Amino acid sequence: MNYYEARQRSDGSGWAWTSMNDGVIHTSGGCVTWPDGRPTEEQAISGTGPKPGQPHAHATREEAERCFYDHEAASLRPTQMPEDEQRRCEQPGCTAWTQRGLASRLLGDADLCDEHRNADGWRAVHPFFPDIEIASSY
Ligand SMILES: [Zn+2]
Ligand SMILES: [Zn+2]
Image 1: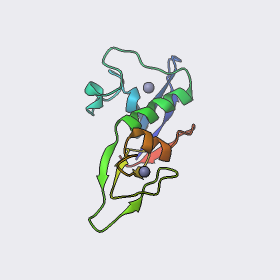
Image 2: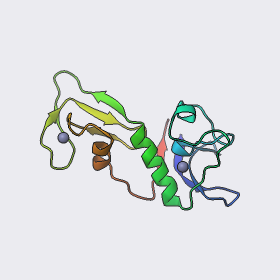
Image 3: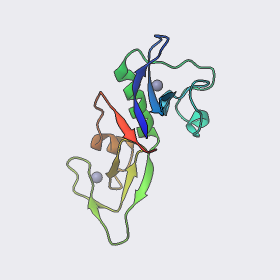
Image 4: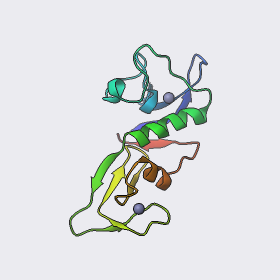
């Protein structure tokens, strides 16, 4: 099990979004840094995260959480429902039907119509709230 939350760096330099597994803590999401992070994902090279050698820390817990939230919103993947299934777009106020949506890695999915199937639509369904803590098998 991985336990995700913003943690304060041990050297007091700030906060970072992290995952803990078996007591070992790594920077995660947009806060992946080398060498203390584990660059297992393409984001380490191509994403919005810091590049090797760049220090990366946030002044507050909430800033680190927003870094994670923004990283999730920038890494959405498309979802497709089965042929015989349709759902209402989840954008507040929208009544359109859709067979598609967007999924984030850790903050949930959203069913979204053609007009709202973008990062802003996903953000409207999953607004940012501070004090994020996530337990996940991946
Ligand atoms: Zn960050
Ligand atoms: Zn819509």
